[in-house]
Length: 505
Image (cartoon, rainbow, N blue to C red; front, top):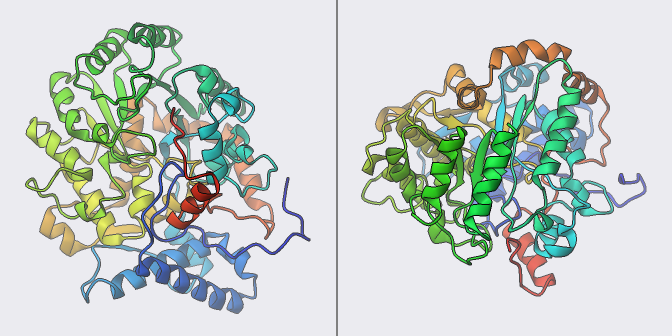
């Protein structure tokens, strides 16, 4: 249900809120004074520019000009807040919101392959059997205009956010861990249904969606999980396996990829089946997870033991609660975050561009308002994991449409002084194109050029063009997340629900 013109006036929102953001699965740190100042500066600049152009400020903020203004405010405040030193990174954006300059700098035609996307099935049995996730999604997505807020994370809004509201070309649809289908917000059969719909729209042969299969070896009998892997691989439905090592399952305890009880049998089964890409959630300790098993310390161990298996580290080990760890790599202080991943690789002799990949879902969104931290995170991953092993992911639709993340990465540069000091590469258009999609295309065996050739005949592309030509209703919020992304907002919800929340049962 859309907002009515007679409804109370919505607040004027930025395309993205500077500072920490939650996908709803964890309570984020508080924004700093610098983050609050960034938001204030962006709104002030938007009012001035919109006034000069004689357009509504809310409408201006819905477009690329709004993104440019917000990124420009991040630049300005980061420079002012860095003890007189220039920040380690910057966004190349026009200062005056000039439409032609904005388009030239912020639009692009890259092959964008988002390897971490999500949605749910609003009418599934999990609404009764897994009320924790139901409550979670009411927190994450209360603002899309639907009476049932879970619809905001449905297949419809997934297609809209990922393929109409953003420049994403191809995506991998992933799931969240659950002990059984009746507690799963998105079963594998529903994932296949989503792919069928997109394949129908991609009638020109573009084929825009691949599927993960979740494996939960610590839920029920391990043999049943391995049999499920067998069945799905034989049906040729699986692009990669997805595991959540911090998830307690039915044992109440997480696990590591290198343990003999769960991890090794899973890896051996993947090798047997010939689907040899395993994507593991590392870092980002979610509510109800065992944070000890979110450590990426096992990645280097299994990468060394199984050089014929590709290990994709989701979130790159990044931990939003230990941002101080994301400076330059220090092997003597590398127990947390991206540094812990790098240490695991180095301790096990895994060189760059080997069989370990680093994924940016939630990580880039979490650091992009802190240009120095962002420069170190990207720089470290590109240097130590490899320029051909860093993969684009957004963790959307949990954050709304991914377009602000895409535009921010397009515009970002690591400052030359930081590159020289720490050996980070320059973020050239060619390197960004690798991260945006070419690296993932190689991993997943996708012919990026063939996809490009198919796009002009693709119904999704036609719908995207029509959608972007439509006049936006100023009562809509185009790219902003649909729920509390702040610590205060999450805690307010927890208080209203008795202070108890463990969505991952």
